[in-house]
Image (cartoon, rainbow, N blue to C red; front, top):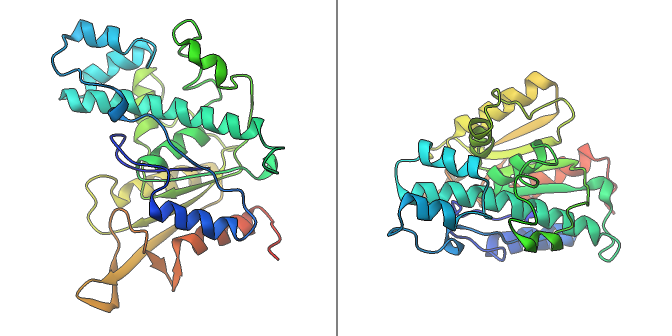
Length: 276
């Protein structure tokens, strides 16, 4: 299951780069599902609302503790809205994976090899999905708050085997820790999914390379297998020369291999798959 990027403000599941990745994986025997989720585009216009009206408006979309914390850690209404969208995106992504698992027989999916991946905001959501507890981003809101939850396979369970993380960060779990007064890296443990990361060292104000190094350190400290592919891209002024990749480097490579091949090879090796 792949989760698109867009800074939690936009993005679509049929982004051409994701479609290309889906075709690459599907042609090699994988069931590849690209999902949509709610972003700030679905949150409406709240700029003229009072704080109390905003709290009421978001009731049922995010838990009160998340809303309260978002007001404390953000400096603008747009950043506040983005924080709410981060929570909603996580709920939607978990619901999407529950749906996939509940329909695994229909699509001939082997539930023992579930992999979740994403790019940018989608990578941030991927980490939070694979690392958080099953009840996180699920049980904070009840069916009484939002009756549509009854259609989201709430009793379905899943186990993520691996994660694919393109130029993302740990920011959503950082916020989750603030909301619920948890210790740093509280949700991480030695049973977490293995992790493939692809990230470039060029300046990236959105998700700097240091975020990948941080995740690598956390994984190494827990003894969980992980791999960080440091991406290079062709120099626009001299395509025969490679330079450090920045954000959104779908054309990034390592030793002549692109990110589709790099991530695929990681999964085949680590999940002991046979490719015919």
